[in-house]
Amino acid sequence: MGDGPAGKINIRIQRLNYRIFLKMKTGTGNLICLLSFLLFSSFASPGAHANRNNALTYSSNINGSLEHNTVFSGGEDGYITYRIPSLISASDGTLIAIAEARRDNRQDPGGGHIDLVYKLSHDGGRSWSSLRMFAQSREGWSSSNPTSVIKNSDGRILVLYNVWKPGRSGNPGPMVSRPGEMDCQLKIRYSDDNGRSWSDERDITHQGRDVNSWGIAVFGPGHGIETRSGRLVVPVNANSPGYEHDHPDKKWSSFALYSDDGGENWNRGEQVNEFACENQIVELDDGRLMIDARVSDRDTGFRWTAISGDQGETWSEPEPGQVCPPIAASIISYPNPDINKNSLLLWSGLKGPGRKNLVLRLSSDQGISFPLEILTGPGHAAYSAMYLIDNGDVGVLWEGGKETPYDNLIFTRVSKEIIMQLQDMSAITRETY
Image (cartoon, rainbow, N blue to C red; front, side, top):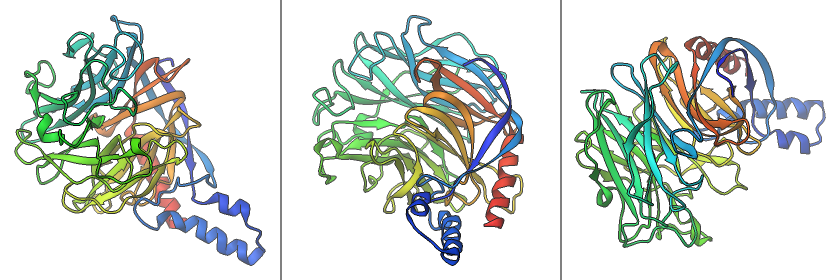
């Protein structure tokens, strides 16, 4: 993908249950009732988002531009590919992009040597520093799943990540990390100077992983949050033998790892009561948390969402959320310029088919529906990480390329102008329907 602006962005307004419309034979009166159901059903409950099935789609054009800049390119600096992005903005506005640097091949941990590397940007993502080492693995080991969070009180940036023994992985199969062993380890580092330098590595495996029962506990990837109460909340998923499922390889789920002392000590919340893995967590305006989690069953076609009323310690029964191929997505809260209205939620993930077409979706009703989307990364795409940056713009660091989704890590800047136009259209949509 080339760098530079794109002048017009296509917006798609989606609605639920179009398949029902195609299957039903209706008369004029029934058609009116059915269309009313289609248009209102997307606002029924949290998790019943406006992308649940094939949708009635409307399109329009919006003025604005996207800025694309390649941050990491496969084959450069001695690494075959860069994957699994994390993005955060430091207190001074410095952007920090962290990624897995896969040296030997494109395989996940267990299949080759993987370091964690990073780059800095001091101009809002328009240019980036040279490659810097964040965590250099022992020969043949893998470091993975960078997940960053910032303490607003003092600007300290914490990055949590995994370390894997050679030949051990978080994926189902003979290489999967074993309960009772230190195949999968959990680490943390911090920076007090906006990413210029980092502390020594500290092990938190026994805080974040039930070592005797769980083979793995895997961070994010992406970012965590600091809630308004000051609690640090980081997304994790773990394989739990206690979770009953009819397939032995699917006995794991998502949960929150949280700290009330600035990251010194960490506690595990309960797991979501469904098969869910890579996830992100966002705080809603009323202080509840919402989790948005990947479902790795390729036949499912949607993500799980659940709500926590105790800041990540327990979760409601999960409900189907965004329609999306199985990947790691990103979700953030975006401040509404009108203080009398809800904050917006922005979600970055794939439209498909397969690992193609990265979109940004907007919710103006605290996650009940996401009726609007713009195409931010056409063509091959996969994982993405999103963060609020300067002047109300949003940055998205995502996997993409011309040949495969894993050619490059690309930074896309979405302007505040675009987001405000999306908000306006969202309000019109809800008032109309």
